[in-house]
Length: 183
Image (cartoon, rainbow, N blue to C red; front, side, top):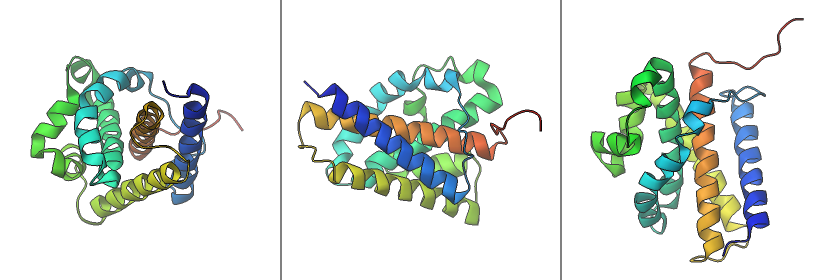
């Protein structure tokens, strides 16, 4: 069984690192926008993604981690444009993967779903890759033994924080800013 305290601390550390980096990069405000509707879909997204993500982790850990950030971006976009429709989709991750396959999930979401092109697409992709690399570094320096329940729990925790980072980043890009009211 995974060490729950270790996993919770690991997830907090990953979340803090991602929020700090994205804030310094200027793609996220100090106060991260929250979207409970999209957060509620996390478990079903994870369940659908996990077979692909785990399979790819050994050979392509940055891809395995980073793709979840793109999924979070897509979910925020879907929430903004027509959540009444998208909230009824049973397997949004499967639909996203079906656009161009797992290997091209980043391009499918950035270009086909979000509509980024050129420098904007390259910037979003580079930020997600940097986030995934940062998370992998945290994983590699956390003393997590591969193939254990704790390793899987930490992988899921990392994916969760990358998902939330993607949601926050895209909501921010769409103009949702969490700022105090008044003077």
